[in-house]
Image: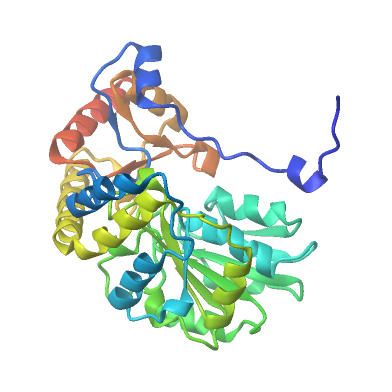
Amino acid sequence: MKLKVAENILSLKPYKPGKPIEELEREYGIKNTIKLASNENPIGSSPKAVAAMREAMRNLHRYPDGSGYYLVEKLSEKLGVPKQRIVIGNGSDDVIGMLTRVYLSSGDEAVMTDPSFLMYEIYVKTVNAVPVFVPLTDLSLNLSAMADAVTDKTRMIFITNPNNPTGSYIKTKEFETFMEKLSPEVVVVLDEAYIEFARDPECLNGLTQVAEDRPIAVLRTFSKAYGLAGIRIGYGLMSFAMAAMCNRVREPFNTNSLAQAGAAAALDDEAFLKKTCTLIHTELAFLQDQLKKMEIAFFPTQSNFFLIDVKADADDVFESMLKRGVIVRSMVSYGFPEYIRVNVGTRKENERFLQALEMVLKKS
């Protein structure tokens, strides 16, 4: 039986997750693998979040709170944003899906960088809208070029800050100039999955930009700094009207009970967040200092990951590193054939990574 599939769905490039560590170890005959490929928290999860989730397991026979009442209350209190302007999702990409369903129609255009988070393109094409790609300039977002790409068909723009996979960032003044060029009918999706790691005071923070009369949706996640990637929980901050529309298409019970409880508790665990950011900043400095001594080029970052120029085929380097039990991310599929991306780990993990990289590059 051959079923008809819509052309916009056939054109999608599926998101390809990596294999489980256990499967990679079986295939390559290795043990004690370290993973520095997915920008995860190297010290685990908030202890308060773990305790809250254990308590929430008592009620797994009940449906979750469809409104995420307590999590939304906590977010409102912590961020100073009215509850009615908060939309929770099964990861922040769930909120991307809501926004595209609400604000994009067939034939509309959505501007994004090339490369960028693959889910932007997937969600845009799913509603039969058209992704418009703007190349990075010197591995950074070029807001001027993105503004130039806007046409009368443009209804959405995706901006990632700090940017993935490059770690570059946008300055507040440059963003405000960019916004002045746009029609109020264009929705700007400001993806801030890594904002907790940013240190430069000039780095744009979406909380300063969200206002009732501005078509801006700020996306954030508990996956990175809070170490809760495994429970899939994120949220969006936007105007009252935009939030109301997103909640019309939001699936019932889209966030589970454990995720809601863990995320709410994580917001109160300021000690864990501080410990995480301190480790990331300390170990990032260590890694980059060692790479300088090894005369290996890398790209500056405001995130918990960065790009390294290995001056060799990045896929080959990835494979060679994997055989030594170190998982990194090749940037070949992102259009950077000689770059790898690595997220900051613990000191022990970082030292092992450096040793493996030095050995691999000597043989390449």
